[in-house]
Image 1 (tube, rainbow over the protein chains, first blue to last red):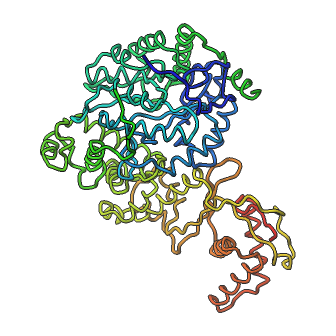
Image 2: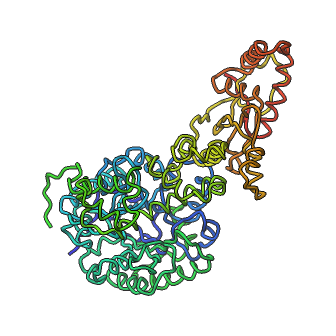
Image 3: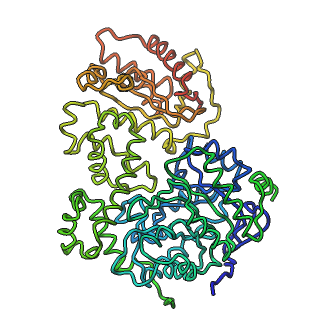
Length: 314
Length: 304
């Protein structure tokens, strides 16, 4: 059985709560979100009826001033913000980057995310950022190593950390654990949450020939705080997690299955390339709203405006 | 699974050996051809140095490499659009040579391309290009400065000056205790080519190297001020005469208006057979400073 006991030492800022409903480790229930992207900024800021919260890539705002900060402020005035990093390199061989951690801390002091997340992978090796999500060998030793680093960052930032399953395209000989067992073991050993990327499960199941439903069976689903929903490229033998296509039927079906089996605090649509007219994303967000309300027991809030008002009163 | 309580924070060996092998494969200049074909990889994967990846087939590794390359090309092209336009036939090759020559040491993706001007100026692969496009490093520097002043934190942030005046006093005796406060994002750059003219020519569709070189030619080095407009947050570019550039540098070194003008006057005396008077240098300088104030390059003056 999954362990869902809250860590009393981790502080969750009440000001980001939407409805008073709390999930794993006191994370507030936020509803349906969208990844904040420069290309979609204007319509995103206007869609407070469809979007309850935004996910920001902290590396796009850390250590920067000017327009980036203006955009962040505009977003913060309308939505609760969650930080979803790409370069923490939580599973990488290098020591955690102190410059990165300090800049992340400064960003958190500004946006007060109730939780933060990054990927179960390495992005930095020998002092160099590789700028892609590279899988690490799945062994008991790497589980211990990664769990220790997650505990370090949770202690440092005093808020829940979620680790996300990535799409991976190669298998190392050194792997001794299946992917789901690896994610489960890391989250249990670190006592952290899971950001479950449903698209990545579908992509990996195709590329590596495993069963998506059995994958879910192996996870401590009580730790799932957030879901990612996105599209992928399926026009070659290896499917690629591009976030540049519409969400496919297999992903929608698996989202419903996940929501029948666990109660996350938020679900988020990711779109990072090949941007369509915003109406196409609105249609996907509307569909997300529908499944969210169908399966999540306490789906509040109803609008981002309501969330922001409650946050300012808290 | 059970975990031993005496775990350590040092990376396990299986992780470090794989990371080293991937680093060698994806990031080093001398391995750029290793994944050029399945046959190339089959040779390389038998080498002892690639033992941790010995059983991994070419296709997934090549996919990762193409993803890294695509991200880098996209970033480089977004931040150096005019360099990309000029170098279109060579762009992919140059981007890959740059990616491996200057691996990214910063978490922010845009920082991965900050050394592109240096790369163009000094890398072996660009030597021939520089013969036909000698203005390339200046163009790249110009494009990078736009990004740098728009995005990065101010290195010389000054926020606590009291008595900041946004008008310049006419009476020069007041200048002894007044110090200029320049825009906190200001960067001064010397260019050897007229990059604004070059960009205009490129926008008009000119692509003949000789014509572009002619459009960009200038006899003497030019001073360029690049800074972030406090309202629009966009980069602004201002060509400066040498005296204004010197005055800015003196101000940045802590000289008051009076001592700055005196320094400038002395340097003009040494350089000219018929040097101007201090009073005329001050009057000219007042005109420049007012222009700088109007343009947001000078934020005001403060008393110390």
